[in-house]
Length: 257
Image (tube, rainbow, N blue to C red; front, side, top):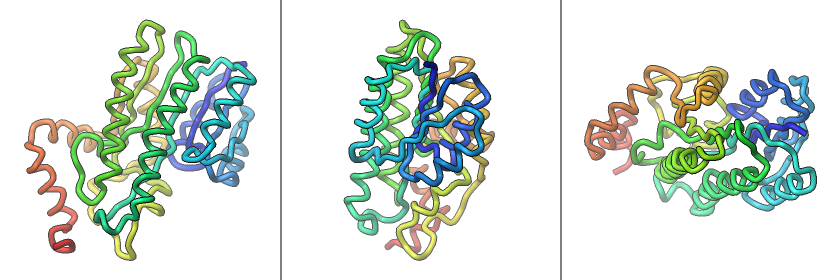
């Protein structure tokens, strides 16, 4: 049985990727997310059967997927790890439990999903690990989120090298600001923390670019001229200057004293 596994398939980038993979030939696509209704909505838009796993990946959800893989022993052609969340605000505005949960979902669960799926992946299989443009520099007032995405970026690109002998491609997908439900969960205060968005991309734009890059065998995908320009800039400009610019751009220096 040929399958794709997509986490975060209930909305946003995960949903867009599931719909993209629906155009390929799979016996099933496994959709993983906490939001069962969102997964059912995604399923209603697809011709490929969507096997719904409405589970919490920060609890026992990853073990549920592991057990299903062991039972069915499918041929996993694609793994898309798009589950994740961020929190905006000063460290003391974000409960430490939320920060720890962010690390569990964005990092630990992603690694476990990847390494539980790998025994069922053959030559030609593809893995999309969702990182972020935030991975390329420390980002005050979303410090834990940016750090988790730096982890994913490093993990994905290094794993891609390790898997070359098996001819499995791993790509760090690094979106810029993308229109999704991400922002509903990200704000920790009544007022907006991030107030200046240089650009806002649609999920389908990001997924289309990522899909093309992965098919070409690239180990990183960045959608959009503004996003790519920012990544180039932060490689040149000193890190302290990058952080200072970000703080002034968002007026954090006036709100947080």
